[in-house]
Length: 280
View 1 (cartoon, rainbow, N blue to C red):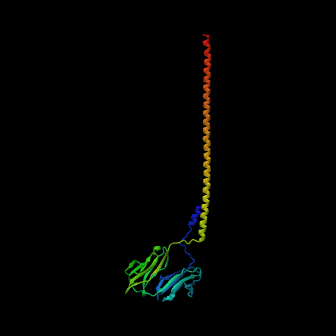
View 2: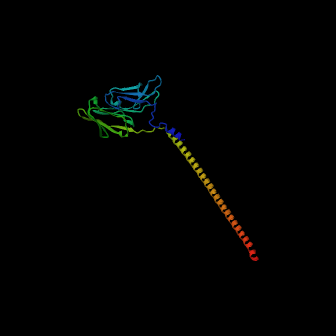
View 3: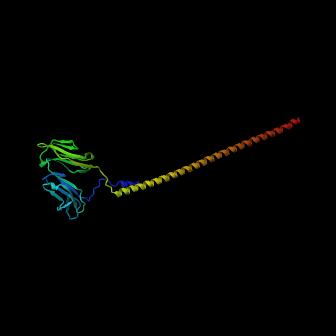
């Protein structure tokens, strides 16, 4: 029974990935860019043999492009929004939110939503790739990293402590500060199907019930055995006591017989002595 539970527990219950779902990747890998910059979206997913077509969606509207690559040249505000893709044998991808900005300094992130353990990349990016120095990264308003020249930062394994609003500041001709970017890190969650949980707990309940019944049955049998042994022990002790009493009674009878015989002998001796006296 417990082997069945072990087998059920051995089924992977967390972090499962749907292999039939398409995935969008970005090049460069940032979800926010400046106006007039270029960005390319790639769609990866299972396809039918000989069919390389890909369906793209921008804000839920189909895009005419049918290739696995969708390029945005000289991005504008109109290119902002939600992107999805789908291949011949896949379901639609998760949405990718693309933002087009016009500012002096931009904090770029590789994604806005992460699962615990995934890497987070940040870049403090200047307008028209202008050189920035004395770069400071902030989380929830508190500075946590300073670079004299480097403008990129990587967190290799995220956890829930990395949740928050990030921004950066840097020196150019002046001290510039970017807008804040919200980053969410989700803890690992089980994606076990509902039917699996139902079957699992049902089996555990049945096994618990069977074990309980077996324990009660064994307990009752032990109690009966104890009572039987106690009764046999009492009968044995009683028999021993009766035997002892009988032995005592027999011993007393033998003693009485011995006393009677001695008395009879004494009486006979007395009778034999009396005639001799009379003859004298």
